[in-house]
Image (cartoon, rainbow, N blue to C red):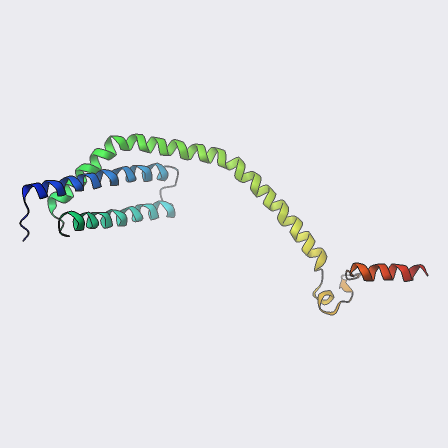
Length: 172
């Protein structure tokens, strides 16, 4: 049994009230983020689970630092009071600000993301064409011979020096 004075109990209670207020504001931020997600989204479930783990960890750390590692009922009442006070007063404004910022970012981000996606697709098509031209047949790569595709014969690309020498001997 711990014999704590009234001043120590009050200090621990106020520390848990502040912890609850901080957790209430964090919950309000997460509520603003979850407003842009579907209800059964994996990210929403992850955010809820991460908040619960963080809250439990924070309560235990606060208990370790203020009341010799023991959690009493009045600690939890203090944390609940701080959470309720912060979530119902400042939390509403925080949620509104987070929702507004996220909607603005999504509104601006979609055209920017679309631009980069179009450029990425164009580069992908360009790279695929280049690769197809360079590597049109595994037989050509392995044996440096003509590649037969269908009824057409396509010669392998020759290095520039050999092509010039071949062009010069063809004129003679």
